Amino acid sequence: MNRTVLLLLILLPFAALTAVALRDHGYIGIFTSHFTSSAGLQVLTDLIIACTLAIVWMIGDARRSGRNPWPYVLLTLTLGSFGPLLYLLVGSLRSRPAQFA
Image 1 (cartoon, rainbow, N blue to C red):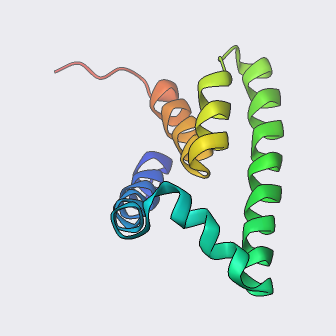
Image 2 (image 1 turned 120 degrees about the vertical axis):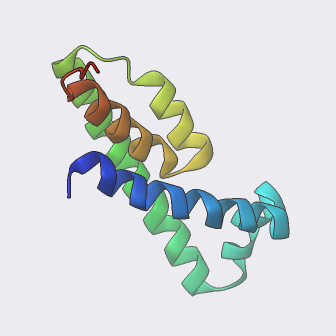
């Protein structure tokens, strides 16, 4: 299975789950539910750490590859894992050789 397909198999169900969560709880509700217990707070803290590490990695990788990381950084800050997932997906699509019919 190639990288693009794998990323789509992760991104599309995650987007569907996010849509359901937004419908059921709203954008703010997704975060406030984490403040009701120490377990929820641990998950939120873990997400913040993971997204921060992803942002640092994206900026460094973008410098090496000549890409603009800032749209993906903004996505990460507002939508979490969507930023890194889309960064990887776009990079995967850009690295594929053009195929002409």
